[in-house]
Each structure stands twice: as C-alpha cells, then as structure tokens.
Amino acid sequence: MGETFIPSDAAASPLLDERALSKLHWRCRRGLLENDLFIEQFFTRFEPQLTQRHATGLLALMDLGDNDLLDLLLRRREPEAALDSEEVREVLGMLRQGGSAAVQSR
Image 1 (cartoon, rainbow, N blue to C red):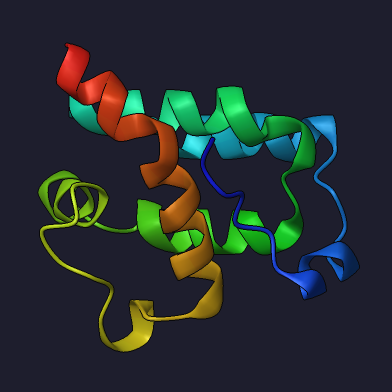
Image 2 (cartoon, one colour; image 1 turned 135 degrees about the horizontal axis):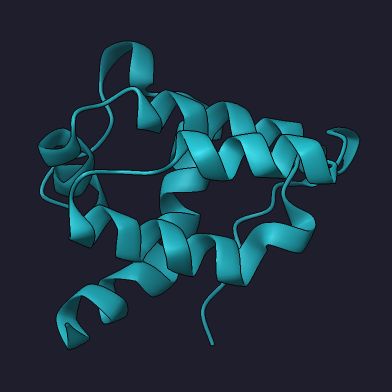
C-alpha cells in the first residue's frame, strides 16, 4: 500500500488523548466538502496514532482558507514560508494519502 509518514522523532511526541482528539476534530471542520473528505479520511486512517506533533501540523493547515488548503491537498502547490515546516509536510503527506481517492470518487 502507501507509505506511512511517521518520522523516527514522532515517537517522542505524546499521543493525543480523547479530549485533545475531540478538540482537533472540532477545529478541522471546513466549509468546503472536498477538504472535509480529505480530513475525514485522515482521521479514519490515522486517529489512533496521532501525536501532539501531528496536531501542530494539522492546526497550522487549518489556519488556511478553504481554497488554499485544497490547493495544497491536491498538490497544486506546496507549503511556503512559515507554513513550510516538518510537522506541516508530514501531516500534508498523511492527508494526501487517502483523500484524493475520496474526492475523485465523489
């Protein structure tokens, strides 16, 4: 299948507890269905192993507007400037793994 984007130093980052996961789900609600499909697939696939490091990257992506986020998810562009961090690139890779198939099947 596809490779899983979990760097060796991710093991040092604590797993998210149920409350933190609930807050993360709430923060990830989007106005654009395509983004929601990527995010839904992300949580379905990776929720049990999400760490604080992943939450940091995901929250940075959630600060983007819907169209900017979709451009990143569909590989129309890559993270730049302050958004270009290890955490963001790692989570973006995870989001891209299953989400594009969900969007295309829609």
